Image (tube, rainbow, N blue to C red; front, side, top):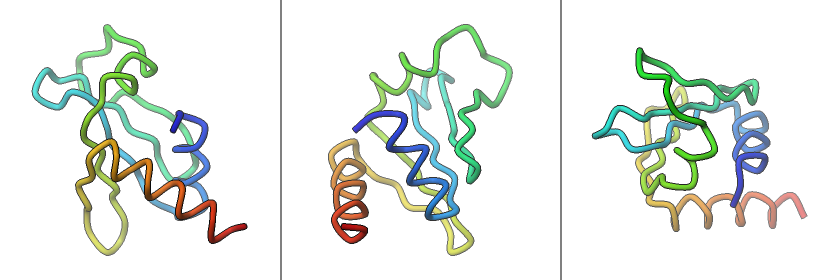
Length: 85
């Protein structure tokens, strides 16, 4: 799993994906256009660092939000690419 795959997923599914160390305020998001952003006031870190350390991912869509572990997010991506085939 990498950032490019998350960006593709967000675009194709029209969802927002949030990840990072939420407790430390190192939150990132990928919007439904595939743009990576650092919301909030703390911006003294790189998105790649936050992604590498992230253990929690939140997929936000019109239907609500789903919390996923890193392993569950990787499985979600794998299943999406298998279906696309």
